[in-house]
Image 1 (cartoon, rainbow, N blue to C red):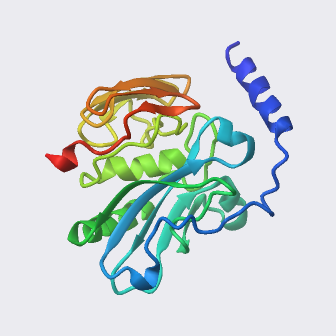
Image 2 (cartoon, one colour):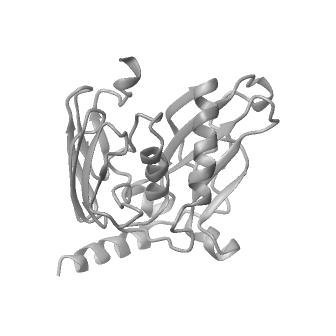
Amino acid sequence: MKILPIILFLTLLSSCSSKDWRTASRASAGIATKAEDQKEDIYQVYYARAFSWRGYLGTHPWVAWKLKDEDSYTVAQVTSWNIRRTGSSVSVQKDLPDRKWFDNDPTLLYEVTGEKARVVIEKTKKIIADYPHKKIYRLWPGPNSNTFVSHIIRSIEELPLELPANGVGKDYLVDNSLLADSPSNKGYQLSAYGLLGVTAGIEEGLEVNLLGLSFGIDLWRPALKLPFIGRLGFKDEPVTDAL
């Protein structure tokens, strides 16, 4: 069976990790403007290597926002432990937007400000309220944190971006359909429960999903897209934002 080697591999990685979440850094990475200095609406998408052995395999993403008249940022994300704490995988709370993800520095994937940010913020709030997998978290193939943020991106046409190729779970379609718009809404995606599929779009390029692992090529910003590694080539920046 193909699944058995994967289970053995994950078990080996888990046994090799000695990180303690209680001592791992959750300090600001110094990316975001401080809340008191942020004078206009802002919306951001971040990701970082996942905690402990999971970081060898993939990433954890989240979204953050602040309206100009608010005193702090709001951070929304999905974690497995939040189900145990609150009964829902979704966490929405006031927080620093650019915290390290347990020692791992975050990457700011996308940022928008002003009126467009306010529109995206309002849409995000509605999408979070209606997220259908609040009671479920599966590391592989999803739904997980990458599924959640990819769902937000896919549902908001003003967000012309995609999660990195090593975001395991990003291709899991939350409504169990087989065909959908690509995450950037600039193409199409065929996906069978995040395990097998193909994505083609202006922002995504061409990407193939095999057992939840993504392989692809970006033609506009030339790069290879690989599981575990992510992206090799030019930095991923939205193409359609410049059009």
